[in-house]
Image 1 (cartoon, rainbow, N blue to C red):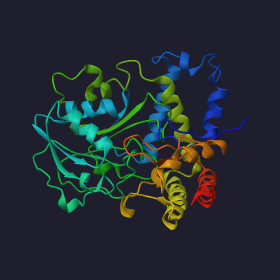
Image 2 (image 1 turned 120 degrees about the vertical axis):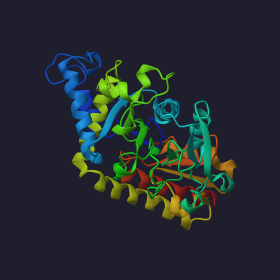
Image 3 (image 1 turned 180 degrees about the vertical axis):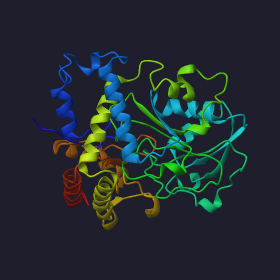
Length: 360
């Protein structure tokens, strides 16, 4: 069996040990005589799986007391609506920082429920930077301040936690959650789709401070009311059971690597290897400002876009897939999530050099 190096932005590569363990347990989980896919979410077997997954996530992120961890569905796209439904709490407006395509989607959706103040934007730089915090025109009466901590498409990432005063900070962390330690206490709410660093598509993680629960808009569906979900231990409706199970295995894998500090250092090494090559080359170009380059999603462009198809064909021949950039920005994109081994980046850099020597 030959496995490729999968540079997909999501659904993304999973750690091979996790896939092997899931395969071994597919027909019979721990002597239950059932696959996890077949279990009742009310049965003792799955309740144990879900409880362990939550406990592991709390441990990895050092989630403080006073926060709820919710397993939901719908991804970040759904949360773009669910967040304002729950977080306005009687206020009329919310502040949003616009740093790329995913921020724009969040802003567009939130406008259906609230007055949205775009208090800073990097549109004028083509979304290749993050606006300096001192330029943000924050409203102290806003319900919350929303950021996208890592823009999967444009490849910009916050390497700091914004100080927004007493207003709750909300972050879409879909593509960098669990890639590094995070001080959860500085956030009112963190959310993210699982399909980057956590597990298969279908699961959404929400970490929310308890004092922010209980004031959802009347139009909020019960299954999307954070308070209802919390009171029912993420089982108000049938949860994405298999995705939660896989997430639990991934959490164990991260723990076995040494936890998030070790994972973060590994991710820095991978990203540095690729960025260093791109910066030394005149054939390739990394468009993102150096102080906010993503460690997870590395967009780059060839000197001549007419060579893009040949580049991708050659990459696939060398067992590297999903390197085509998002249609919104073009070019190439290498996603270096936790499960991408250093060997994969080394193989990519060797190919970049080979292709440049042939076509440069």
